[in-house]
Image 1 (cartoon, helix red, strand yellow):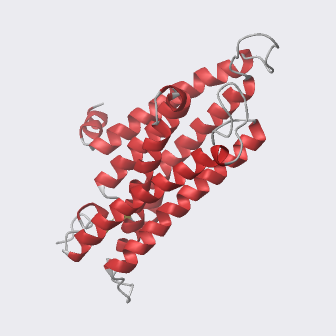
Image 2: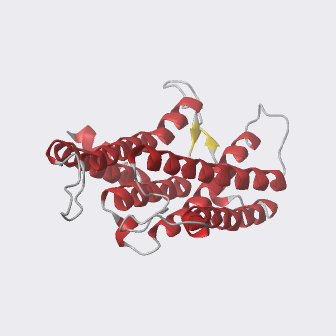
Length: 248
């Protein structure tokens, strides 16, 4: 019991946030699983719109995906022996909670104005930070002979962030087609399909704010590297702990 309490006291802010998100996802998955068996399969003509079984299945898929993504940084850091910057990890956790739990499970995407655009802007900056961190990790590796300059790191981080933003749009497009969703806002709330530029407005708006968010962070990151202040973009390799009884 004392050992467990010591471990809990030794947890960082990021680890407490991760535990909170994990518990939130787990509780939601239990309720969503129950609703899958209770929800109707099809809409009843002439009746108010209700949440269908397919909607709950998609929610469950998003929660499971969220848990996998939540565990991914820890798995990678242990596998490749590096430390993730605390601020970058906290930004990642905040985005995960805001997009999957608040956005999808709690339906912030449909109830909070511009929630989608806010998250896309935030994700662009966050992914830019991760891109910086990966390349800076190689720069700090003594086994890598070539050192990459701040300009190259900035370009890579920008392309990394925008590419993942594009992959997200592909994900939305795919599930809109498979499950008749409206994540890309190609139709109005009453089901009326949009046409022309109006049908592209949401997707292009997401891409534009992805670009702006990543560009802002990349410019800040470039300036910090040029000034020798890499602040939050430094991943560090884990130092081996000396064996007991061996002099340091």
